[in-house]
Amino acid sequence: MKALFLILLLISFGISVQCQTVFYSEDFEGASPNWSLNTTDLGSIGVDPNSNQWLINNVYTGGVYNFMGIIPITIPNTPNEPAPVTGSPNSKYLHINYTPSAIYNANYVDNSITMAGGQNGSNFAKMNTDINTTGQFSVTLEFYWVGIGGAGKVYYSTNGGISWTQVGATYSSQSSWTLASIANVAFDNQPTLRFGFLFNNNVGGNDPPFSVDQIKVYSPSAGSPPVADFSSSDTTICVGSCIDFLDMSTNSPTSWTWTFTGATTPSSTTQNPVNICYNIAGTYTVELVASNAYGSDDLIKTNFITVVDNANASANTIGHVCESGGNVNLMNYVTGTAGGVWSGPNVTFNFFDPVGLTGDTIMLTYVAGAAGCSDTSSQEVIIDSASNPQWTVPGIQCKENMPLDLSAYITGDSGGTWFGTGVSGNNLVYLDDYSVAVTYVTQNGACLDSMMHVIMIDSVNAEFFANPSSGMTPLNVEFINYSENFTSSYWDFGNNNYSSEISPTWLFDSVGTYMVVLTVTSINGCVDTARHIIYASDDLTIYIPNVFTPNGDESNPVFKPIIGHEVEDFAGLVFNRWGNEIAQFDVVSGWDGTYHGILVASGVYYYVIKFDYGGQNYKYSGSVTVLY
Image (cartoon, rainbow, N blue to C red; front, side, top):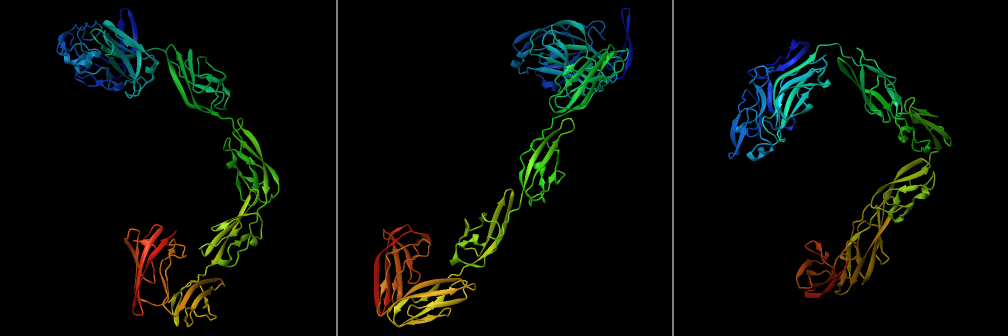
């Protein structure tokens, strides 16, 4: 039976009398002892019908069984309990049992259990309720036990069974019931104290295994234990400094155990430790356990000591600062301890304003760290005057005037650098863009400035088409002007005749070859020209080129014959070296060098050209070379 409330007992042993405060007792005689058997705490096996298990009963009789069904095993009777145990000699008790044996007294199988399908390891049994020892000291756990084979252990928990800590010795090699008593300061002053028993079958031996009965938790009624307290000479120090501690405990402690986490002296047993030094920055806990004959008290002051790094005021060199560059955040230069303070001319809240200090060399000071752990450094700063990137924007430029010398437009500092699309050194070359953003950058020490202008480029493009471009005289040619971005046109027909019409028609009545030149002018005066040859003859003439270059540069891009007159039923065919037809073309468009839209490889190809003229049929064949 158990009792979870405080009971004052008077227990007599012979002629001596001792007063005890009992917090818990369990003799397992009740119908349902408040214990959990075969749990998985501490990695134990848990419930397994093929393994050793904790059991509560009053069976003491042994017997014989066949291990694995073939090996006879004799289990001895469990020893009778002594008279002080309630219900002795055969009361209910907590013990290990190998269930498959069908013999239910205290017996077990060692690590050979795995041969019969069981698990090798440990078994755990634990209390289900908390014991409150608040304000009590010298708390003692007492129980009767017996056990020869295997190994028994006792565990306690101070957090309601969440975690467990072993206490006391290993329990084995004991053939008769004996009384165990464990007193530990960890049992004192605990609101949620619990106990548990562990059995490990890895250790061989004879039956019986670990068995327990008559559990009691109590403390002696006596004087008052100490109440621990202390102070220190300082709680915030620099790295490398030392502190003295003063014991302020009450109720006359007779021994002291100090723990100084992080200190060079990690512990002390003197009443008032001195010169406790700390060499690493951080916050540290100090613990004092004060004890006397009636018990002890443990005081832990978490984060009690703060150790501050000795400050380092180092900073990167500031050097040159531009007077027009705006406020400078001086903290960006700090490489040592942050959070300090800068001072000097024009410094406000760690920002430096260089305005009005052009050409000066000044000194700025940085102080880092708290008093006692601080450090100071100074920086020389040179103030540079602003650079001048002024330049004027050129007027509208014609593409034929490119490249443009940009340096001719500088009105500020020379020697700067030009940036922008189409910029090469100090020149702007022609691009297809009609406007280009160009930036000029100048620098004087730390002063870097720039100016950007947009330069407009006028691009006029001359081009025309002649229809027809050859024929018999008199040859009437229609000129179609498809120039771009022009406002005026001027035609030179190559025969001392001229026109300012946009798309004129001209009659060539004399045999000859005429170079027709079109000159167009843009609104901004930019000029471009285009040229084409007109063939005027008095009989049928035909010119068939033997090479062309369809590489996209608009120079000789197609293969087509030039015929001096208009013809009828024109058909052009192209064949490869194997005689396969790869293209057809007409007299106007010609062949562009492709097969199914893809440029053919360079090499020799063959053509056949047929047409009618003047009532007669004409046929021409030959080869043409494609080059890239």
